[in-house]
Every structure is written in structure tokens, then in C-alpha cells.
Amino acid sequence: MTLKFVELTDLSVDAIRNIEQNKYTPTASTINSICSAFKITPFELLLPDASVDENLILEINSKLKLCTNDDLRRISKMIDVIRK
Image (cartoon, rainbow, N blue to C red; front, side, top):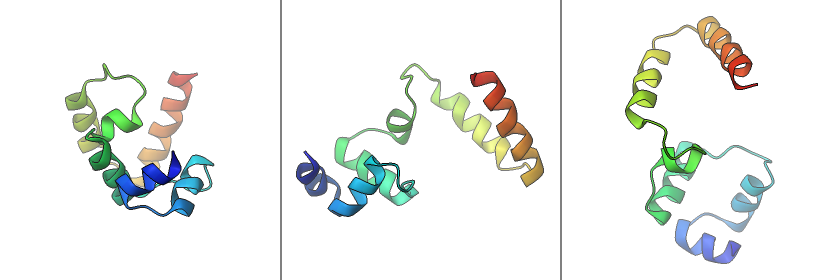
């Protein structure tokens, strides 16, 4: 399976294993390579719920870009509380 994944994504075997074993977080470029190989969007790859409204996520992301680092830390903590 890993070798087929390598062929489809042009990623190295080591890179794929590191992602699989949670040794490092894939970069945006890596995520794009994976999505292109499987003809899916990053939303479909990263979000477990396919019914998530992509437009809403884009809207939230736009708002987050305007936040300070302190704001982002507080928002992250709020999300952690909500997701429990």
C-alpha cells in the first residue's frame, strides 16, 4: 500500500511513514499532493465529517487570519472546550 501511495503522490516512503506514525505534521504542499493524487479537497482529507459546510470553514478561516496570536490561543482553548 505504501509503495502505491508513493507512486501516486511523489512523496518518499520515509515521509509517508512519518505522517502515518504521527512523527510530523504534513505541510500544505504535502497535503495538496495527497489531495491531487486522490482527487479530493483538503477539506475532505482533513475533516472527518463530509457534511461540513466548506463555505462556513472558509469564512471562519478568513476571520481567524485577522486575529492576533493571543486571540488565536483563546479561540483554540474555546474549541477544545466545545469539542470535549
